[in-house]
Each structure stands twice: as C-alpha cells, then as structure tokens.
Length: 183
Image (cartoon, rainbow, N blue to C red):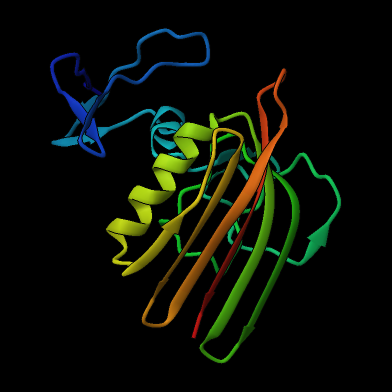
C-alpha cells in the first residue's frame, strides 16, 4: 500500500488556517491514498469543538457523542451529546456533563443541558453568537459579562438560551446551561 504523508495540503476550519497537532503538540499531517485525503480525527474534532471518544468495547470512534442518550443527573465524567440538540450545535471538546434532560413528543423537541468546560468564557460567547447568526436566528440578545454567559435567541420554530458563569476562576472552569427547543 502506498500512501502520501501530505505535508503540502492546507486545512481551513471555519475560515481559519488549521494545523493539526497530537496531544503533545507534535504536528500531524493528512494522508492521501487513492485520491482520498484522510485527516487526524482527534485534531479535527477539537478544531470543530465536537467531542470525540474511543469506544474500545465496540471498537469504534464516537464523534459528537454516541447517538444514544437518556435523561441523567449528577456529575459524570463521560460525555454524551444530547440526542435532540442539532448536530452542528457547538460544544466544547472537553465538555463534562452535569445534567441532561431531553424530551420529544412528535415534532416538539427540547434539551436542557448543563455542562462544565475549561474553554475560555470569551471564546464560548464568540462561538455561540457566531453559531446563532449562521443558523439564521433573527432575534438574539447577548447580555454576557466578563464572568457570565447570557445569550437568548429565537427564530421561527426554534429557541435557544445559554446561561452560566465562571465557577472556579483559578482553575478556569465555566458551568453553563443550554436550553434548546423546536416545534
């Protein structure tokens, strides 16, 4: 098998140059084989702010969660992306689920999701405002401060509220809740 470690190809993620690295900061490069280019999945998931795990029991990579979630409560180190949250809704790569409640009746879906992250509050606020704008939310109110995130947005049949605060400034931990619903 002949594959090319493609050091010449550039990668752009959300209009910004992206240079994949491993956990130790070593550069990683795409591989080109049979006219297909393969990217390092962990580095790409972190760039896209989508959680990733390896499920050794079933020998599979889980990108964005396992796809099966149930209402849970209490601190949990494991992460499952909420099933009813839009698949492109950005969540930090280091998201730690604190509480998740989901409901779906017919076409009505809702998610109430509390999580913790070490991602900077400033980056979270920017990411969510950009996402809501991209998704076409026509009424967005951002009353976030240096220590809190507080964004609410609506569009025809969806609403989103994101609110929380820095709970440990020394460790850089923010806890926030996402409430999303669609009819």
